[in-house]
Length: 438
Ligand code: ATP
Ligand code: MG
Ligand code: MG
Ligand code: MG
Image (cartoon, rainbow, N blue to C red; front, side, top):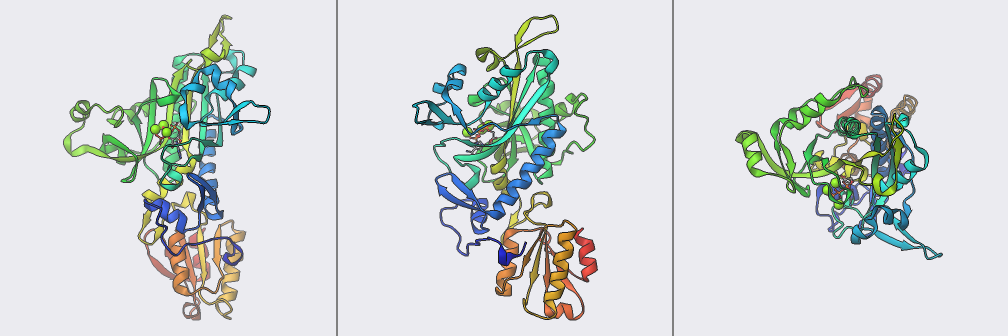
């Protein structure tokens, strides 16, 4: 992508309304634009990161056996009357009436709708286990939308729903999502700690919130320090096998949010020097809630001896759009964002210090073409902005590598390659640069 042809509306001033660093940096880097309280447009750079996060979520969901579909944002109120949540949900639900005077709502979550899909097609235990998910916009009319995409009103969520014959099988499904969550966040450069949590309006009795520690987080959390050094399950995890040992390992250390913490228990089970009392960002939550929806909504399957039983369900959310904020909170410095490679909007920023120059132009064009051909995403700054502004923009948008082509270095055939995370710079030939970026 050539910057001269791109749409990257960088803000020079720090927006006053932004209270936390991720919100400030997303606005300054031209990633999002607020259209109304808690409702954002995703500008091209923000959209690229959102796509990357979605891809990781999709890959890890598939690995764990979940199947993607897509449900609508608008739902009929009648489904929610069946479960009893239409009245219970309260003011967070955006209620709409269509021209036929039908009660509709903008979905805050999809337990009812997926249960309706399930009951319409699935009849037998032989079709289980089943896990269906989508990545779709949700609306919750939050009392206090704030911190940019962290607490939006419209936000993107991955929500998966598992269906099993009984509790034992349902816990196996729960464990698959649990383990896949550990992998999902790790791939984005985050350490998310599964914590005992309250179930809220989703319901049920087995639940974990996945929390990333950050000073700007909205929840207070209590956990064991060793979580920070724990090794994440690798690619060799067998999702068809027994995942209990991994889940037990990840739940044996103390970790709870303020809603459910038992301080005496915390102090008794964690030695003083290992105690973390900190703030955290909820980036996902898993629930097992048994027959809470299947029972009232009549989602039943036949068992092997022909009896009909309500199916056991769980649901599993990931805050896809919130993750952008969480990643930036965890990875930035005074100059801007530092994207982990897997979610970076581009891999490399190529800076032509002197467009129109007989030395820099051909080298940049050649390198740009070669990077593109090699499938390495590159943002080529071919504008005639000042050098200082170019460097500041590159640091702000936080691409993992910057390659600077200036007349001075190129006299000796050398480019400056800088790693954003470490700030380390080296002078390399075009060939060596290409090799390094592969
Ligand atoms: P919170 O406690 O932050 O209000 P929640 O517990 O109400 O979140 P869930 O119903 O568990 O949210 O939804 C699954 C995930 O969706 C959350 O873990 C979070 O990452 C994300 N999420 C929830 N509400 C918002 C929001 N208003 N803006 C952005 N992401 C959100
Ligand atoms: Mg909430
Ligand atoms: Mg919560
Ligand atoms: Mg939650």
